[in-house]
View 1 (tube, rainbow, N blue to C red):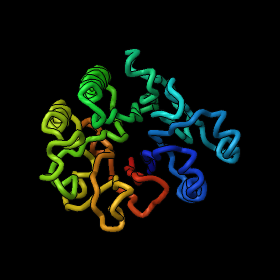
View 2 (view 1 turned 30 degrees about the horizontal axis):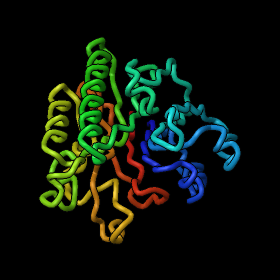
View 3 (view 1 turned 45 degrees about the vertical axis):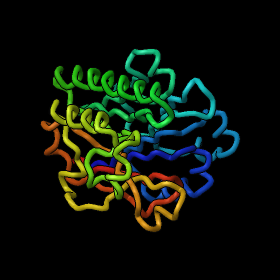
View 4 (view 1 turned 180 degrees about the vertical axis):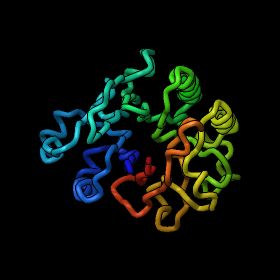
Amino acid sequence: MLKILSWNVNGFRACLKNGFMDWFLEYQPDILGLQETKALPEQIQKDYPAFMEIKNYHTIWNPAQRPGYSGTILLTKKEPVEVKKGFGIEEFDNEGRIIIAKYEGFTLMNIYYPNGQMNEERLNYKLRFYDAFLDYADNLKNKGENLIIMGDFNTAHKEIDLKNPKENENYSGFLPVERAWIDKFISHGYVDTFREFHPEPEQYSWWTYRFKARERNIGWRIDYFFVNKEFMSRVKDSFILKEVMGSDHCPVGIYLE
């Protein structure tokens, strides 16, 4: 059974400072995708050399060109057959949001999808990114590849996926156009693994740092694992590790047969 996890760490150096190594070495995932790392390898080497010396893992970095921004990391016990960092589209690839790792039996996509809250321009960027991603994923799926797609999508899909849907329906992250894109994505043959196993409400993966939101469980579920429906039978559970601290997000994961 493979244990695969995804975590938006909202600054990897801060997460390392807040106990990441103890958690990671105890939990021992087979694959862990990190998003919003905001760090370069040389910065981690300088401040947290123990991370760079982790044994039994291959570490794949894709930092953004802009310092202290975005970025992804993939930690994997088994070395992928092939790795790509991007969709081949410069406006998306230079933000370090994408690591695509091909294994025997499946292709895994670790993605930090854009946040659209800053302004209309960034919302449009987010929607263009979504469409570019879907084209790329569909192309792989249509070639017969099985896909595991994990990361911070920066959108809550349905009202059940956030505590206060009515108050947030005019904010990016829960706009009708963003939610409709997830409907479209699912209609292309992808499955939200968590909802297959957990139909119950009040299951969140992100909480604002303000208002004691995490303590009061006033959150959003914006971190997902999707697979193509043909591959869903291999997924044995999908879960949220809400007790794990170190970021305003918590890790989410699947068990794969």
